[in-house]
Length: 301
Figure 1 (cartoon, rainbow, N blue to C red):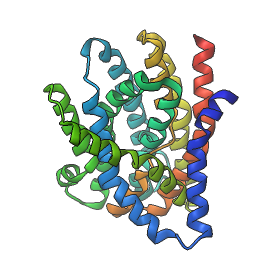
Figure 2: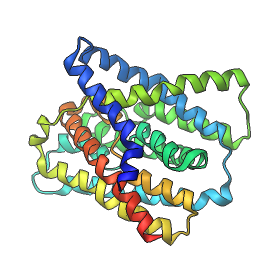
Figure 3: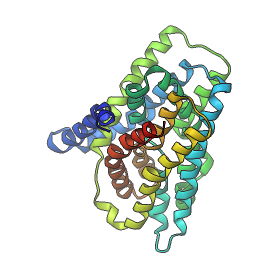
C-alpha cells in the first residue's frame, strides 16, 4: 500500500501545488482558466494523438483488454444514467455530474502507469484511451445536450478529445507513420500536458456546491471509486489478462474523474460549481482508491 502511494505521490503533489498557487499567489483563477483551455484544446489532444500513433495496435492481444475497458466504462455509464431515477435527484445536477462516474483523469493515468508499469503499460493504456475516451465523451455530452436543448452532433464534432483519439486510432489502424519532426513536436507539446493538467486540477478544487445534491454525489463517487474497481478485478482474472494489462485495467478503473468534466459542464451551460466539487472529492478519493486497487490486485494474484 505504502509503495503504491509513494509511486503516485509526485502526481498528487502537483495537484496540491496547483491548489496553493491559485489561492496563495497572484496567479489566481483567471490564469488557470486559460491553462485549462490550453490543456483541453491543444496539449492533451496532442498527447493522446501522439501516444496512440506511436504504439501499433495488435488485435489478438488487445481484444481482452479492450473488452475489459468497455465493460468497465459501460457499467459506469449505465449506473450513472440510472441515478437520474433516484427520488429527489435534480435533473440539472444529474446532467452535469453524471460524467463523473465514468470519465477518468488521463493526466493521472499516464503519469501513474508510467511509474507502475513502464513503457509496456503506456502502450496498453494508449489503447484503452483510444477506445474509451470517445465513448466517455459521447456519454458525457448526451445528458448535457439533452438537458440544455443543444445540438448533440455538433457538440460531439467539436470535442477535441474525440477528434484526437478518433484520428489517432484511424491513423494507427491504417499503419501510417509520422515524420520524426512531427513526432518530436507532438512529444514536446504533449509533455507539457501532464504537469500543467495536474496543476490545473488542483487550481480548480472546491467542495462547497456538493451540498446541493449530496445523495447524487454519493452515488456517482461510489460508482467511480468502489464499483468500477471491483468490475476491473473481475475482468482482469475472468478474461485472463496478462500481468501488465491487469495492472493497467485495474489502475484505470480506480482513477479520479476527469478534470475536464468541469470545463465541459461550464462550456455546455451545466452546473459548474457542483461538478467542481465532485472533481475535487474524486481527486481526494483517488489518493486512496488507486493504491487500494493495486494492493487488491497483488493480493489476488
